[in-house]
Image 1 (tube, rainbow, N blue to C red):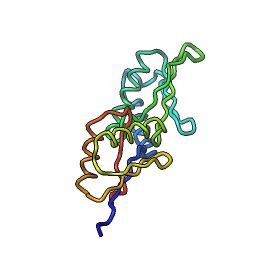
Image 2 (image 1 turned 90 degrees about the vertical axis):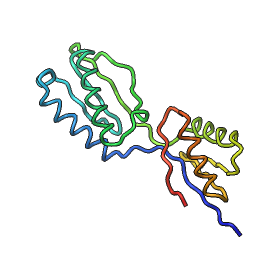
Image 3 (image 1 turned 60 degrees about the vertical axis):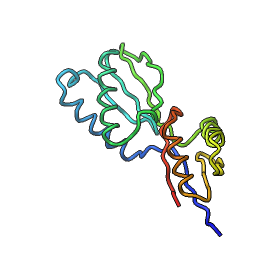
Image 4 (image 1 turned 30 degrees about the vertical axis):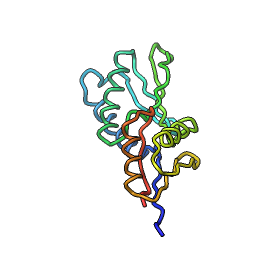
Length: 163
């Protein structure tokens, strides 16, 4: 009797790495000559970031620094939900950036539909904010991983718990 193999499809952001990236970005903000005394800052507001600056140009520069530090720390930019730029008090601008954690119901359904449409003999099933894929052959599971990596679901997918 062949044993079942499985893996989980998840989308998670390591918040400790995000905090480290923000710390590095803040250090760079303090040393860059164009942003040194500009009042630009990055702050945590619960589980999201608030980036603020004097004008749109400086805000873009701060976001670029933050993005580069996040990428170096292994945090995919696809998992950032950048909100609309707001005008704050004193003529400053700010932008909230949230981290997408877990697969939404819509993305989970899209992933399951894609797997079933491929005719690979595996069984996908939605489990909260992840999708478990199980099958008899590890080769089929690896084919599913390759299939999902070749598609863009608008969020970074990680494949965990491979047994």
